Each structure stands twice: as C-alpha cells, then as structure tokens.
Image 1 (tube, rainbow, N blue to C red):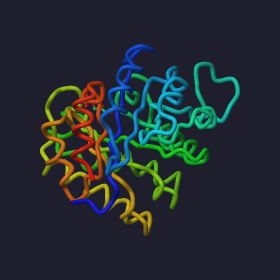
Image 2 (cartoon, rainbow, N blue to C red):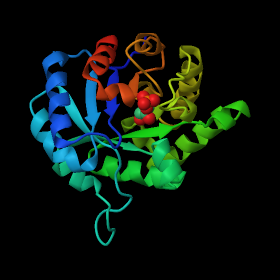
Image 3 (cartoon, rainbow, N blue to C red):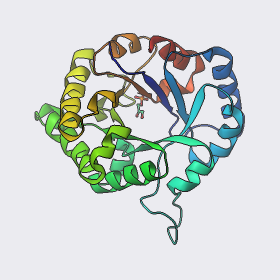
Image 4 (cartoon, rainbow, N blue to C red):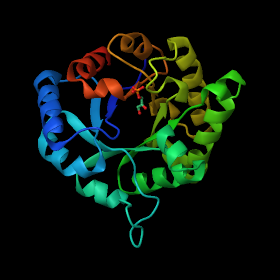
Length: 249
Ligand code: 13P
C-alpha cells in the first residue's frame, strides 16, 4: 500500500453541460463525505467558473484539462496558468495522450506546460504512456521514461511537486485495464527515474489511468507505487466515481 495520500482525479474530457455538471456535482457532494484521499474533478475549461462556484468549501478540488505553454499575449484560444489560478484551479492535466495525438503536443510542450503550471502554483498532472504497438515492441519503459525525462530536464528538482499519471494508451476508453502487476511495474520504473532526479521522489504521487472503474480500482490502488487514479468514463457516473474514491486511502 502506498505511503502517500492518494489522489483520485476525474477527467471529464469534452463532456458535460451546465445542467449535467450541476447534477453530477450535486450527486458527488451528497455522497463524498470526508474522503480519505484527495479528490479533484477536471471539467472542460468553459465550465471552470461554474465548477468553482459549485465546489467552493467542499472537499472536492478543481482541475483543468490543459494549460498554455505561454504566459499571456497573442495566443488565440489559449488559457494561461494564471487565468486558471484565477478560477481556483489546483491541478492541471498536461500531456494527456489525446492531446499528444490530436494536438501534436510534444514532450517539450508538455514539459513547458508543467513549468507554467508550477510557476502559477498549480500542480501539473503529467501524463505518460505507451501505445499498444510500443508495448508489443517492448518499448514501454523507453517511451514513458523519455516522456518523463523531458519534464525532469526542464523542471529540475521542482519535479518533486508534480503528479505523474501513467496512462497506457491501449487502456484508455477501451475497457482493457492494465493488470495491477503491469501497472505497478511501470510505476516502479517511473519512481526510480524520479529518485535519480530528486531526493523527494517518495512523495511524488503516480496515478494510474485507463479503464479504471469501481470494480478494479481497489486492486490497482493496493499496489505500492500506485498513488491514485486518473479516471475518464467512470468519472461521469457519480456512483462509480464515489466507489473509486472510497477504495482510495
Ligand atoms: P478512461 O477511464 O475512460 O479509460 O479514460 C482514462 C483517461 O484518459 C483519463 O485521463
């Protein structure tokens, strides 16, 4: 069992509406009680103001799904870390595989985003993970280490302040979860890499993401280096998300 306070983060991706968000948050707040773990939800950016209003004073924190690589200026469509901070955002997902794939985000972009978030006092949740083909070719460790190395290189000892999320691309939205042993093996590789970069690697939380659900969460969260979950589909169903929260420490 992990030595760290676990973190359960809901990534709503591009889902929701004013009405649906209000209903979902209402159900979450009615059931969450005093959670043993940290809990955060990451709605689409346009709803951060609504969620800030709904969550203020509650045990559920607010996260963003992305942050700009820039501070401010002529970057149409971008939202800066300081702007997110204005809305009470505590965490920002950076480098999700869907953005790496569809928005051509490189390892260097992801590293800069993590740096911008840290500078604004926002904890970046840095996503890493291999595709099915990369796993089949035996490249998993190489890929995740390359992705994390860029963040370490740019952020130095500040990496002790980040959260890492291992999300195998083949497990996202597919119902194919990594086994606890497969996930733990990669988490151990990431922990060792962090240890070489900071003496505080033991306090960095490494989340698992990819078809985590109410039925498989407890077994994954029991692994020594799995410190929480980054939840997609199951974060949109209050009963499922709350069961995952209850399974965490
Ligand atoms: P699913 O839980 O839907 O597989 O999504 C995982 C994910 O991508 C969270 O960021």
